Image (cartoon, rainbow, N blue to C red; front, side, top):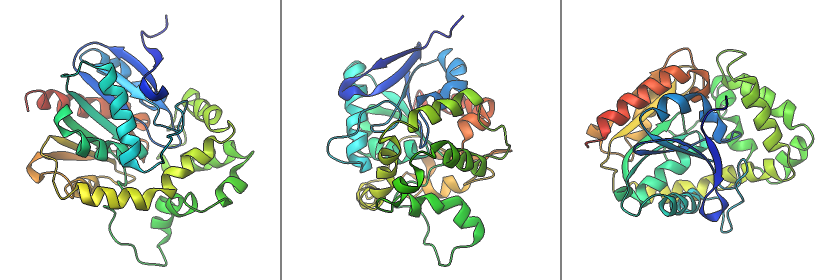
Length: 289
C-alpha cells in the first residue's frame, strides 16, 4: 500500500508533497535534491503535523524564478505559495537543509510573523561563513569546493553535461559518512531530476547569486529573529558549528541544536530517525512559544 502522501502544485507552479494532519510544517530540501529528500521523516512527522515538502524554484520539478535566484526573491515566491495554500491567519514551522536553509532564513526574516519556528540543517547560509584564508586546506576545499566551482560562468555546464550521474555520485559519496548514506531510490530520483536539459544550470544559479543573497541576509540580520530556532549539523560536516552560524541572525537565547552523530552533510537521509526525533522534540517545545 502506498503512503498517503500526494504530490501537487501550489501558486507559482511550486511542486509540493503533502501529507499528515495537524499544525503545518514546511520542508525545504537542498541541491542537488528534491522534496523526496525528506521522505524518511514523512511518516513520523505526519502523526502530529501536516507537512508540505517543496521543490524550490528551479530545483526538482518547480519552474525557474522569473526575477532571479537570490534567496530573498526565491523565498518570497515560496512563501506566497504557502500562504496561498494555508489559511490567511495560519502560522507554521519552517525547516530547510542545505540550499533549503539558505532560503529558509530570508523567508523567516521577511515573514517572521507567519512562523512558529525555524530549523536550519547543515547549511552555509550566505553572509555568515567565517572568513577563509587561501590556499584552503585540503579538508576545507573538499567541503566547500562547490561554492567556487558552481559559481563559475559556463564551465560547470561544459563539464557536467552528459555526466550528471558521475558528478552527483562523486558528490554524494564525498559528503556522506557511509557509502550507503543515501537510499538508492532517492539517488535515482535526483539523477533523473538533474539530467533534464537545463536542470544543472538552474542549480548552479543559486551559487552564482550567493554574493547577492549574502548582502541581503546581512541587511536582514540587523533585526535578529526572535522566534525559536533549531540549528543541526552532521558531525562529519558542519556539526555543532551550526549553532554559532545561526546566532549571527537569531536571538541567542532562542537558539538550540547541536551535532547529529555518525552523519555527514545529508542529515535528513543519513540519520532520519535521529533527525526526526530532534525535530519533533523542538516543534513540540515551540508550539506554545
